[in-house]
Length: 68
Figure (cartoon, rainbow, N blue to C red):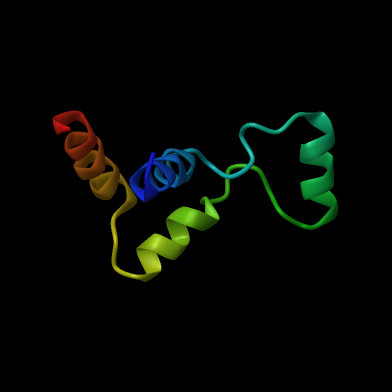
C-alpha cells in the first residue's frame, strides 16, 4: 500500500458533496458551525485551486492502479 492508495481515497471523498455521509447529529453539528450539506467538498476545492481536476485525476489514477 503506497501513497497512491491514500490519494485514491481522497479523490473518492472529493467526488461526494461535503457531509453526505453524516448522520443527524453530524448534520446538526455542521449547521451549528454555519456549514451546509452539499457544499463543494474542501478536498475538491483545494485540488481545483491548484489547477487540478479531481475527476480527471481520479480517472487517471484508477487506470494506473488497474494497470498494475
